[in-house]
Length: 148
Image (cartoon, rainbow, N blue to C red; front, side, top):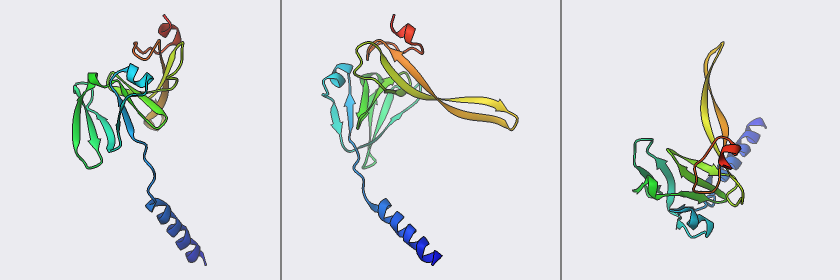
């Protein structure tokens, strides 16, 4: 009886994993004004965007058919997928939490923090909130600096 129940659970899991889910297409924005007017380039065949690191001048767009396309880092403002919007800032993409705010734009990103415990070194991901005056201005850690 237990084996039958286990087999039913496995079969149901396989059926759910075999179902294809709808993937939201990426929309690329080359300027923040394109984001405000929702006039970006929609790429349904885009699988991921890879950031080459600090010293690399290009972003790599990986398509679903495994082909790659290089885009200059400074040429892409950001992208959206579904209801989430990301801005290209520095060497990473940061999530825009309040893209339609009139006063201050709020961003969210993660950073890894290493600290020492009695069991050795530990690394923990910490959520950071960042702020800027508008979608094109510099990003600050404090709200007060962003409002200046």
